[in-house]
Length: 181
Image (cartoon, rainbow, N blue to C red):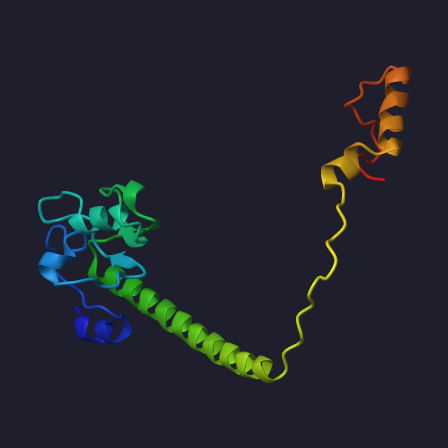
C-alpha cells in the first residue's frame, strides 16, 4: 500500500504490530509522558486471530476518539465513528485513506486560517482595549425569572379565571399563548 504517501498526511506513523498497553504503560515503552493522539483511524478492527484490535480497547479506556471502517464481521460498539464499508478490499481501503487524508488537509488548512486571524485580532485588541467597568454599587436584587414569569399578578389572575370557568388551571385554551406578560 502507499504508506509513504499516507505518512506525509498523518502526524503519526502506521503500525502493523501493536504492542499491548502501549498507551497505558507508556513509561515502559516511551520513558515518560507523551501526548496522546487526537484520534485514531483503523482500517481493520480485528487482529489476525479475528479478535478485537488491542488499540481499540486502549483508545476506549483513554477516551481517544476512534474512526474505523466497519463491515459485517466487526463490532461497532467500541468505535466512536464507525464508517460502513468493505475493510477487505484494497480499492475501498485506498478510497477511504484518500478521503481521510483530504479531510485532514482541509481541517489543518482551516485551523491554520483561524490561528492567523485570531493572532491578528489579538494584536489589534491589545492596542485598542476598552476599559472595564467596575461596579461601584451592588447590583439590585431581581426576582428570579421563574418568579417573574409564573408568580406575577396577571398570570395568577388568568389561572384563577380558568378555575372559576371550569377549565383546568394547567390547561391553556387553543389559540392562547401562555406564560408571558
